[in-house]
Amino acid sequence: MLTKWGQPKFRAQQLIDWLYGKRTFAVGSMTNLPQALRTKLESELKWDLPETVSRLDSADGASKLLLKSERGLIESVILRYEGRTSLCVSSQVGCRLACSFCQTGRLGFVRHLTTAEILAQFAIAEQIVQPEGRRISHVVFMGMGEPLDNYDHVVAAVNRLTGKDAFGLSVRNVTVSTSGLAPQIRSLARDVQAALAISLHGARDDLRTELMPINRRYPLAELKSALLDYQQMTGDKITIEYILIKDKNCGIREAKELVKFLHGLRAKVNLIPFNAHPGLPYQRPDDQTIRDFQLYLAERSIPAPVRYSKGLEVSAACGQLAAKNLETLSAAPKRQDVLNRGFTQA
Image 1 (cartoon, helix red, strand yellow):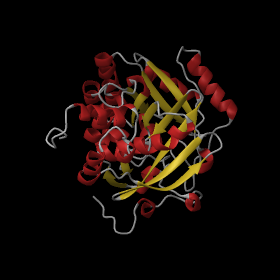
Image 2 (cartoon, rainbow, N blue to C red):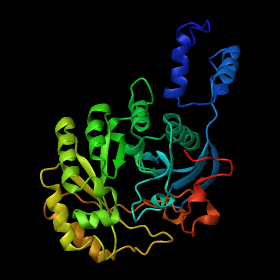
Image 3 (cartoon, rainbow, N blue to C red):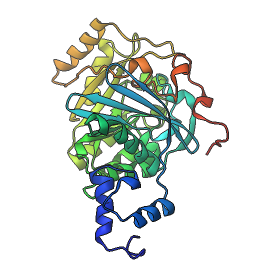
Image 4 (tube, rainbow, N blue to C red):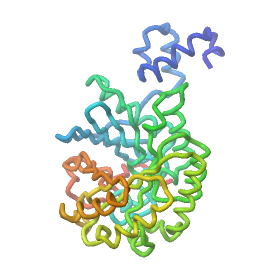
């Protein structure tokens, strides 16, 4: 493109260095580009990022961003840790999978996000954390939506995030999470290099179907077959995400079922105590129940750390994303929360 504009070839490398090396997305700040070229770039190309409608900061280092995309509201979450900064990105407006414990699923599906809209979340987060002396080092596709339901755009975004000629994040630091779309899991092994996380939450078909209706389409036997194929193709360890829900999926019976499901897989299990939110009857189990479940796995040589989600106080924790601002944090999620006047469903 730049050569067609009569620019020398090295200008393209300068632009790449600003975008991917320095992670600078404002053309006016690209000071080694001639002013005339900056003006042309701004007029010929679209540089506007989604509007940040609100930002809610939690005392534990999480920042929940409510972003206004072209046809709907989405949420991203910045997670600050000592030594790293993670970004949880959304891949859809709403979600069609309707998991019973997740606020996003109660909104229904509105539309897929484009590759540009996914990467825009990264760009916005970078602008926020750079003045703090941080950079986004990890990206997890665990926000609104089912990433593998928006397969092409998510794969393109992952490849841009990890590409050596792009943002260059470590492939170990980009995680794609899925509720278990078996065919796409196999495709993912061929199409990207990234970490894989599976939202499991139950290792018995009737239980998992109750929690995650996608299990009717891809029951546990089919899911495990896909995971075995994925592991054979990639050699990668798989992360199993398991939300612990009181009196539902965290007894010793369920622990035994989980151990059986994991047999033959190289996997670790992240145990996530349920994060309560309005409109659902579920509750978090007590500490002893969590310890007993964890111990059962540990005694069978299955790594199973307990992960307490950041951002709980601002409804930014696992399962809580539903396009809410400060005034609606305590309300049950509603479909209109993700839609603005004038937006149309796609």
